[in-house]
Length: 278
Image (cartoon, rainbow, N blue to C red):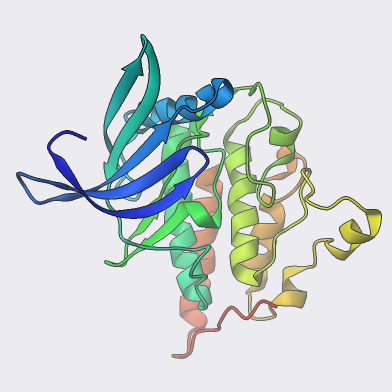
């Protein structure tokens, strides 16, 4: 990105690298996602960056990572590389640093629920909520990141998109997506955070019947008896396979998490139960 210097590599993925960069004039740090088209079918990776940029500019929430600029580099009249300048948020993802305190988990996921409710209220579905897309910053903030798979409510995608351990059935079957899709992804992420295990989804990662039986979803109470019943019930409701049986919106989830938090505070005796999932 012109006017900036590279500080260090932060991570990499399919056709992408993320760098910490520094503005030469101001000294301010940013994160730069660089996506390079190497093969003909790599257009989908460029598409996701364009989507992330466009949808981010329709949103405004302090716990959603900000997107500032998109630079398009062309070769022979077609885009060969995209550079997305983003807010730099040093910290750890929930995936890499699973919180061990249930009160902390509820606080984090209450913030995530509010972000998703904000997105849904603007007609946008995140469609890829997962522990690796929830960032806990060094300053104690929570940031929801990665809008590459986000879409307008009602969208039917032309291919399956999502992360196997957290994907909703309607994503796998390529049906219209709405706020209840985010509810499912959210619930699957919360289940993993509370138990350390992923739920089986409609996109299994195992092939044999025996392996699938071994990976059947266990009740949260069997994996972590410290989780309050109201929180167990909320998670179970969120990961219902049929969208009509889930909470109807993220706003409902926000409200129910608020009640869970209030109840936990009333029962608190100075010691927080911890997340000890197997």
